[in-house]
Amino acid sequence: MNFNVSRKLKSDNQPNSNEANSNIKQEIMRELLRQVRRSYNFALAITTASALMTLSGVGLLYFNKVPEASLTTTGGVLASLHSVQLAKEAKEELRQMIDED
Image 1: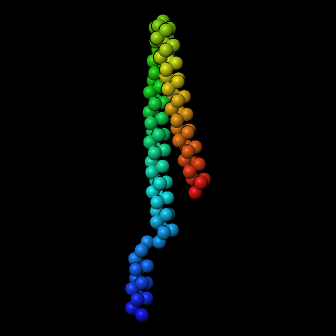
Image 2: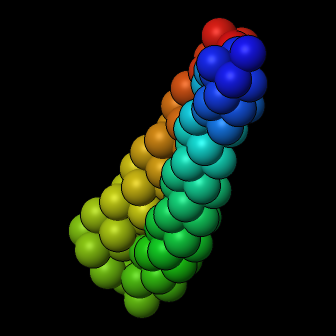
């Protein structure tokens, strides 16, 4: 009879495998959300910088510096498009991972 009681105590002290899996999944989701937030913040910073770059290109155009203006404006637009694309890909990856659960 003591054997059954001690066996029951041991099983009560061990974590449930479903709970452990659930905790692991929650930790993974938290990490993914943190990464997505950072990628959006990074994309926002890049977009802001590229917008300033584009505006400076327009300013150069007013000073009749057409070659410099075209390079600056093109660089700003390309950086903005790329950062938006990165944020979009991160969002899609998160959606796929959520749907797999």
